[in-house]
Amino acid sequence: MADPPARPDGLVATLTTLTGFARTLRAAGVAADHERTQNMLRAAAHLDVTDRSAVYWAGRLTMCAGPGDLPRYDRCFAAYFGGERPRPGRATPPMVTVVRHTLAPDATGDGDAAGHEALAATASAVEVLRHRDVARLSAAELAEIHRMLALLRARREPRRSRRFAPSHRGRLDPRRTMREALRRGGEVSRLRRRSRRVRPRRVVLLVDVSGSMAPYADTLLRLAHALVRCEPRATEVFSVGTRLTRITAELRHRDPGTAMREVSAAVPDWSGGTRLGDELKRFLDRGSGARGAIVVIASDGWERGDPSLLGRQMARLSRLAYRVVWVNPHKGREGYQPLTGGMRAALPHVGAFVAGHSLAAFEELAERLSHA
Image (cartoon, rainbow, N blue to C red; front, side, top):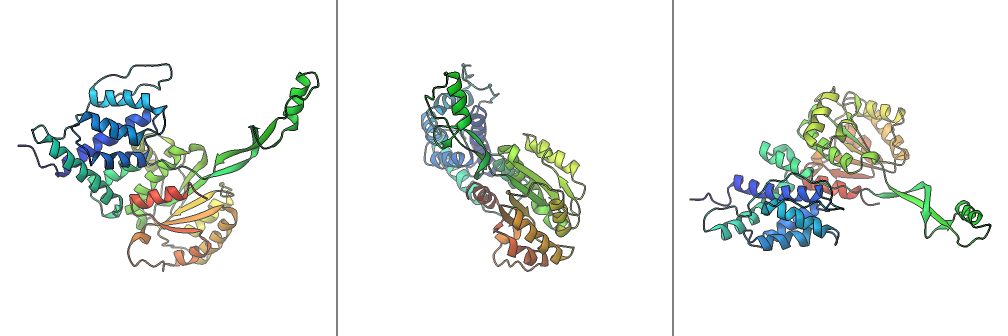
């Protein structure tokens, strides 16, 4: 007899199949981000998952962002669920190795009902898991959160650069206009224009790796890895504790496990004390790029040093940065009050004070980074 469809192993297997399909789509160039993956899960929960055609259309309607995604989606679906190898084409990205999965979670005659119930239970379990405190999760649940963080796509707030680029609209570009006129014998046939380039705003992330932040530091660093992966040229990451350590280069590895191992080897003060005031002063003194950037400080505010020093450095930071966001894992707990000396000194100079205890809180933070 088949196992009950609500068994945790079956739920994780079904979720792994669908998220694996999403990763295959992204590797092929389809915009299958975290939100689209969740939409596919919700759509599939109302379908018969043993019906290949129904799952095909559920994925196509939720995963594809435009007509250009349709051929890639068809090739990936055939390879992932049908065992076929995608045919190379002129505009096809590099092929990815895929493993065939079955759509039916049950080999018995009750596959229709079991598949529907299992997928519905999977989507519900994922939604519950998104809001749970990562410090209270089991090892398997925490690994699932880390896998979902790897799907996170964090867009950045655009900013206008000082540099100009050719444009159909905007101010007159006299140099290009005159150069073209000289090529045509001195006749001005068309006025050339230019406008400022638009680039993503830089984000600087300071992650507290002290002992009091131990239950959250690893997950926060995986969030930092997702931010670096999305915008490697516009993201800087530092660990803070008793020392300030730049870990941006280590987080540029595409594989999260490799990146975490590199970070673990690079950070010398894991689970030590916290001297936020001293480290923030060192960060600002070295000219680490806070000017005009969104600075995110992830810490619980347990300051071993002088809180007044932290307050002065936060005031200095607020004058330099475009925006200061403080992420405190304890803020997500009911009844929390920022009573520690470090938090009381820092909060008057913080533009946004947000929670950082769950996947949903991390997604909200990523959303903040994409809006003015």
